[in-house]
Image (cartoon, rainbow, N blue to C red; front, side, top):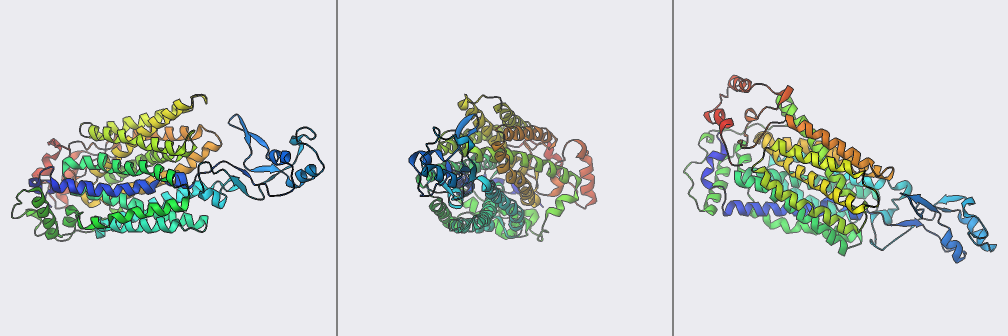
Length: 558
């Protein structure tokens, strides 16, 4: 198998073909920003208290029937109990005045037997108000959030297999159609269970879009534009959708209408089928060299450069390569160790990133503005990461921002309640650190795995990361018991993962590997001398080429 980057070097590093593909693929990520975190608004719990039915009560007793309780040092009305309605009705009929003739603390209390009364100051309706997901049923909200991430887990597992078998492009567009349908059906949910089931399909389709489009861009674009796509491109366009979401939710306060509107955004991507190419790298691994050459020749025409008569000289007699699966990752000790460390990194980063993102509705202030600020914080992170990835080693860069994100979260618990703005600023700083880590780990992982295993490897890492995402809503839920617990847990995990990162191989200025034998070795116990790989390659009947032997000494612009 020849070197794809060398064979297509005549295309240049930029040009109309690369820029067109860059922007068209990036627009796909906007839809993932729309649909990734709408649960922040759809699952929000407005202020509420027990519903008092229309019975014979004086105005004094109607105002006093809801007891007061202490929450975070403040006296507020109870959201889950009331004084026993029968007793209050008798006292009201007999002419007693609450607080003057009768001590309310002696009254027996009961649950909200007649339902709840919800404030409509912010939301007209949410799944919480529609299905009374409060008090004894409040666990159903983080559970619903977790079903989205369970869908991420399922989608990560199957999208890698489907994408490697049927092609990156097909999986991207099939997933877009599936996402559109799933969100639309979710808007017609008649029960909480149906909402959760459809949310699983939303998650599966959404992560399939993200991974397949990410890998497609990584493989189609030039070295120079690959870094731009995988940092400033993919993540910034996701952030555009994320920043737009709170303003759509601000204009549409009814959750069913909001989901119906969001579902229609996927329709605009249908024409892109005729403009986005399939990955030539993937076609080559399938033995479809003529199709790969046709795409490259079309790229040369758009870039106004002349293509050689034969582009992939060493591939003409190549037969279709075998399909790689997750089992191939388990066969090699080196790949097993690299994958295990990547899984730990993705888990910790996802817990922190999604934990802070889902927590925006719990922060003080306007929930729409908090969500917008949380999304806006990501913009400088993507811009800075794009610049740093061109110059800095991946390992040191990733560990630095993991320490920043985790360290800030550990500091938040020491901020007094009177300095809410300082706590909010620290939380946004933590979001900045996690966003930096999130953007770096994607390109870092894509650079570590070879083409034949890249989609499977990315899928496995993303699947394991969903375990972190699934637990993120419950990590935030711990804040109902102690406000500091979520920050302590997320901060500690992040600091620990920054240490694990130092054992991964460095990929700065390295060729994007095509075959398993071209993968670098991890550092530490799992690593071995470089000579061992060369011997194994020779034993397998694949002697190292001159290009492979000197690849570690080359300095490439990536």
